[in-house]
Image 1 (cartoon, rainbow, N blue to C red):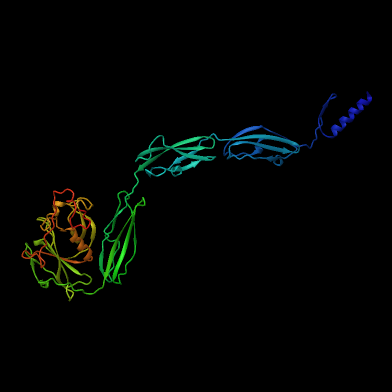
Image 2 (image 1 turned 180 degrees about the horizontal axis):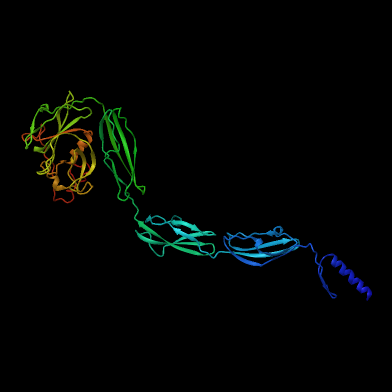
Length: 463
């Protein structure tokens, strides 16, 4: 018995020297090493919201014999990625584990761009193009729900925009969508006509040029090519118009730079030179005459005889004076109460199309003075096939509101071959239409609905 007690005491002494706790048939013996690190966690599992901060030391609740900052921590938690993580703590022989679940219970926050978003019928709508702001702690997928609506047809729609995060939380917004038929019609370029200038003169390449599009209010226009005003010759200038749908059209013009020399015009047989000293009487009394002296860089003088509704164009003779009649046109001057002005004028502005005071459109308009112009017979619309055919058949008689009307081929000739600033004289001579007489004006069959909307002298006349 005594020997057995000695053995037990030896065992206890050994165990005690190791600083452990043991139990046996002989009861419990407790020995704690005063230097052993000890710590506890206040929970063994927790859940946090994605994106929230996580500090593993916040969950250490009891420490002894160790500074909590020196506890070894294996922290794999990524708060931006959903899932379960095991965080391990260690100090000496103490090891603890904390299960952390990162979850997402909040739906994404987003807004769509304000206003109405416009697309064509064959254009794909990209979700990201509609997003103004978007916020979430996880990856977000944005999708479109058409809700059975046919976005291939023109119209106004409400489009459902859905933002879904990695946890399946959704936020829904609606965008205003306008679907239009795609524009396939290129712009039209007006006023691109051939021009003759005299050596040394400058030409504004944009003067009189206009671009129109059926949808785009501001189509672009580029110019390719150039001319040398100091070098006589022919130059090609190209105009390229493009609308917002990338439809493109082009037009070319010829610019002829002529030498600054006097080129006498061949005198018609039997026509005596005009001397410039003739007085032409008007009904109210008074008189109008003109000086036939040539003007530098102006090849022609244009004379309008109101009394005979005739225009005569004079070219320069060998002395550079306007004595040789080269062309005559039938015209329509102002009717009673709207008489055309008389006198000598220097022409100014010119327009390929010009809106008239009576609501019609005139082509190749050249300003004589104030509201008085040379121009074509009126058109109901800005289209070549909308001619005022009844007015056309009045050519050769007083019919306008004061302007001088000409058929299209005649006004085009003035527009193309008489440079800006050419002189015109308007007078009355009841005895003679002019040295070349008065041409017979063309007529239109007003009963033919297919052809009557066109000026028959138009180069584009399709019939």
